[in-house]
Amino acid sequence: MLFALICKDKPGHLQVRLDTRPEHVAFLNDLNAKGALKFAGPFLDADGKPDGSLVVIEAADAAAAKAIASADPYAKAGLFDSVDIRPWNWVFNNPASA
Image 1 (cartoon, rainbow, N blue to C red):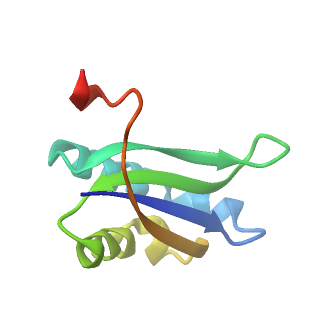
Image 2 (cartoon, rainbow, N blue to C red):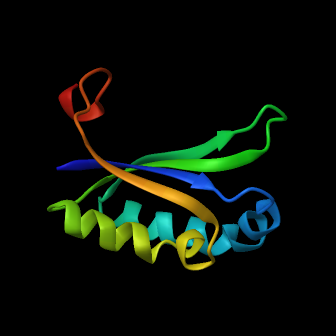
């Protein structure tokens, strides 16, 4: 099942994001190698600076999705103000359907 991780950064934590980015990218690369990462990228504020993340993963259930979200180096560094984990159905432009 697919899950969307909708993550909102804490205000004033851009430097935490920048400092932790190499570990976060390595984490996502590992998920990608395992086939669990479907897509990911940052939300941007009005100035074009990252202020959150959208990560779509495949996981067995909500508990497994929560475990993946909690293991993200950004989460471990305390970057996120909130993380909403929602089951998601990829309908349009899903490469698996092509």
